[in-house]
Image (cartoon, rainbow, N blue to C red; front, side):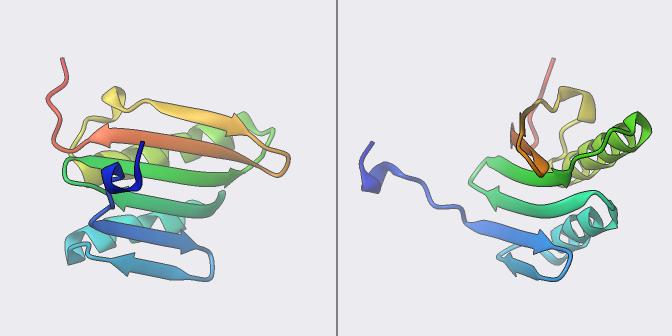
Length: 115
């Protein structure tokens, strides 16, 4: 792949517990994105919005408490669903376990019609 073939996002957001940065999101999308901060296990969130695709890269704290894990994943899928207009049961993700956190990567088409 050549550099001219790489697509740049036309909107992005970066959040952690202390800092928030947005570029080119609508005010209604910003309100939804800020709800990531209500999830106590969130370390940081990066969101890139392309022409018809959203990409999420989310770091969450490791925990052995199954209830906390399920609650965090439910909250994450709800927020992603609100932002992308894709039903939460159609959202798939990749999870990578690191030493200090779990890394969740989600990529989905906006307004996708899923069967």
